[in-house]
Image (cartoon, rainbow, N blue to C red; front, side, top):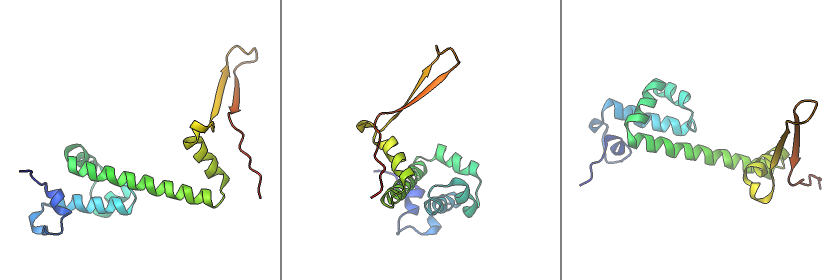
Length: 138
């Protein structure tokens, strides 16, 4: 039979606070604070009233807590990506360029840096774009 940790119980609607330790209550509160702050540790720790060191100790020592924190990090990344897509839809060129440089490499949207160390005047750096996007406005 599988044992259920107190932190797992904390997420359950059938567990009362009486069954939880003080640490479990703080961990549950920390998970909720991390969700609200999109994973910003300092903000979450301040709202719960624990030190950053406590949070990082829990990450090292409590596998279930670590898993829940990692899931929150994925949610924060998803949020940031959705904001980037909104900026692209709004026609923000820098967001489009950033997206193409990071996600469009397979299609040739890369910057290539070359260093010519044999150039007589010192170091020469050449920037070359593999694909020159058309930025004409309609």
